[in-house]
Length: 140
Image 1 (cartoon, rainbow, N blue to C red):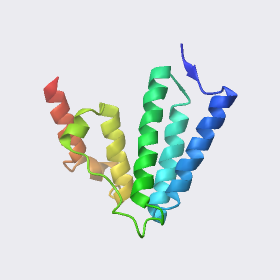
Image 2 (image 1 turned 45 degrees about the vertical axis):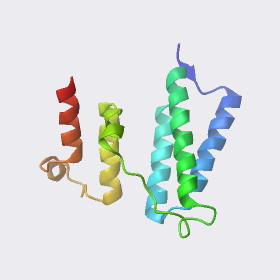
Image 3 (image 1 turned 90 degrees about the vertical axis):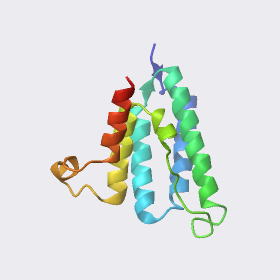
Image 4 (image 1 turned 45 degrees about the horizontal axis):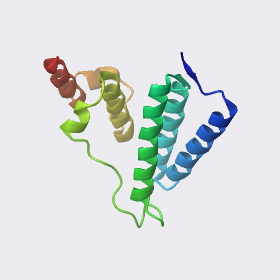
């Protein structure tokens, strides 16, 4: 059985939640706001139809993100708040699936502007993604 987000009450709640996240992004520097909003829209579109278990995990994690971002931005916005961002430890990365590691790496490239449009440039360089993927494959 697939979880269908077309139910009107749930759909309205999801829309309101997504809009709240987008409002939080307005407190970020312009580049991060644009990147965060695009990523949010993409992720919510990707998860329109998922199992109830996946939907629960998805919403819990996005709720954590929203709370974390609100805390980092503070009441008066990014200028008066603590530094933005969070460092992932190896322990955090151990809980990620391979596709999540890849997605995180793509987000890192987009945020830092390292992918100058050529995948060959990126693939020739050793990366955090490669070392994490290698570490994960050694575990199995």
